[in-house]
Length: 461
Length: 126
Image (cartoon, rainbow over all chains, first blue to last red; front, side, top):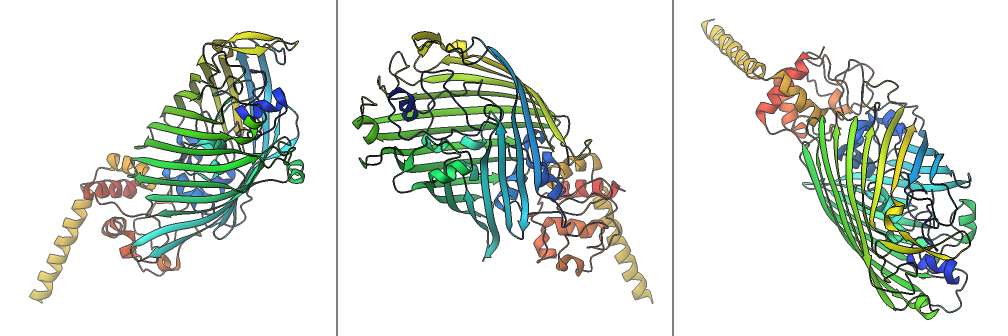
């Protein structure tokens, strides 16, 4: 599902994308922003005979346990040995969302209730060592079906002397989609959101903004269940392909390829586990409708992340997930077309989430987000101090009555009910930023006006 | 004859001692060990297969013969093991030493007390 920040700012999402509506200087960010609803796929449970709680903290996706991590890295192909499992699942997410104040442009009411997404998954084992995770979604805003996620994998287990390794290949639609841990863009908390929640703000590293617009081929290895390494090459989809999958047609075009790299150390003691990792991404992006200049904006992302899970006997589960990503931007195109003051900018993004789950059923999560960056009055035109700073917190309580081994409907049905509150201490620079009213006139809006309460129902079969 | 009697007595004694060592396991603690170490892949519900076979009624069962489980390796089916406490103990200490070509992706449990506890728990599953 594509997210939009246009309700909250005069432009939209990534700073580069903001130029689309402000000055029609399309550059990079363009991309469809990360999918808003993470995933829970009962077809995997039917395939393996395992309960949802085996793979996921809290008996519902997507936060993976070590069992889930190994299942993913094994190309979603482990099974209980029985044939005839159909690798198809479906998901419906509905929510009631209330903002502290309605968007100033009148584009939405203060309170919204809607079926946010309806998704169909092809997810499961296709053959020995081959499996897939793919999701087609009809989102509330246009009800068009888009290809949300795609991850087709091949993996083998190898023994090299005393070294055990899983090596695999992934054809996928999003750089962080392939990651097995719970810290990076696609898989980090919050797992449920919608367009009426302003999220963590309109600016985020490019590696998190590519979903729906690119395809990649990644090679990965997991050695002795400790060392994870992944390298991927990405390119943008052709316009005709974007049309075919209902991708973002205003997306930019890579000049050359995008380069993705990931390493992590993982230690699983069964009772608890932790990971620490590094992430890198590099690409150059051109305005798809203005390729003649040959100029492109360059993005280099470097991140560090860490996670910890205490699982114990699964009655009391604690988790911590954190990441820090810095992006260096060289805005050759945007700066040349007067879209920014600076040729070189940077963004720094910090995310931290901690959760407690009781009996794989009752969950509490607290998270903080903080994004900062170089002052650039032109680029961040809605910011009153020229900085992109957005910071706040998320609180969530949820109830997942099913998804355990002896649950009703297992392994066919699962459901989560939750309440989530997102609070902002800063949005686009400070406690107040500039947006537009219904007539397009600039008006002040407080960061806390974006505070949002959401009740959600999330179910999958 | 006396020699055989002594050997039989020694064998019986060792078997009793071995059994008593496992009997010392705490099934209640073993339930937690099972949840931590085994429960993702094995069920404690009769007849329910996961990635591995159900462990209900495993004591006395010939390896590779759990009903309704189709995921056994040939190596497990051909192992000739009949599961008893000592066999389970050896197997879960280092599965690949006992069934080198087996499918179970488990490195083993070093803690002898935890093994005794989980064996006590598994033995209680009917």
